[in-house]
Length: 81
Image (cartoon, rainbow, N blue to C red; front, side, top):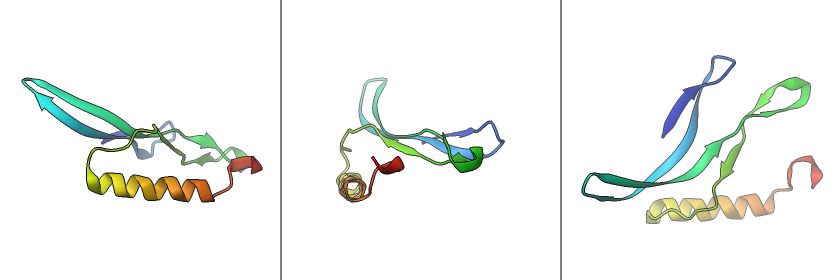
């Protein structure tokens, strides 16, 4: 997990990354989700998470990821698209 401070002073989780392996002194990771703030009505900052489209290696995370993908398919796209 990567945590950072936004321009408005709030702290947010910015990235969710999974460790996929380790060899010698090298750690292999893949980013699963990234936080990208968007402007909402009235210029208010709205939280928005972007999936990197990579399935997690962990069985627990994989089940959760699949349920999130199914939820996203059922929801209409922002702006009615």
